[in-house]
Amino acid sequence: MVGVLQASLFEWIYHRYWLHRPWLPPQMFTAHTLVHHQLCKHEDTFHVTEEEQEEALSFQWWGGPVLTAINAIPWAIAALLTRGTGYPGWVVTATVAGTILVYYIVYESLHYQMHKPTVPFIERSRFFQFIKNHHRLHHVYMGKNFNVVLPLADLVLGTLVLRDPQPARVTEPAARQIARRHSAWGKRLRDEVAGTDDSSPTGVEPLASPPES
Image 1 (cartoon, rainbow, N blue to C red):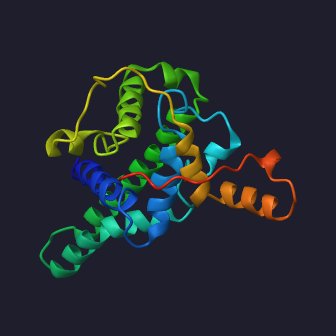
Image 2 (image 1 turned 30 degrees about the horizontal axis):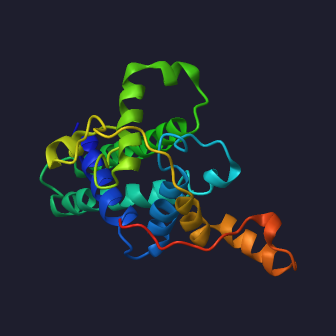
């Protein structure tokens, strides 16, 4: 239970202060806020239907091990400090680390399923529909609904939004322009333009400024 609570809180902190803030390393903010959020912004683009949208849909392969290790550090320090006291420090550390890793795997799996539905029985479940709508609202209001798996931290920290008071919106063309300014897909398009005399087939347009995070 402690591991689940820690995972929800860490997910909230990591999502809010690293994925939506241009801190180091800036690649996380770029991939998540300037690419993923722009390509899957509103109801009409939330589901991934184009290859371009898949670029920042998942984290890098090393994301799970690194985030698990970060979460295990305080428990490992506690285990070292309490050696010889009877406190099962390393067992607790391993249990929490395992919980965090499972939470991360669930995060990646559910997030992928939210944007690119592939498993019908999961898609139909009430819990999944709840957290999918929860995440969809995050794409509309980037300062709300930071949890993807369990919105416990959102509830406690006051960032929980259950419904959108506004009617459904359509993703503006500037969103794709922003994404292409920072994505590998956009770089490939620019390289294609640079290698030809006629740039019209690629459809590369003037680029807009990044959104507020």
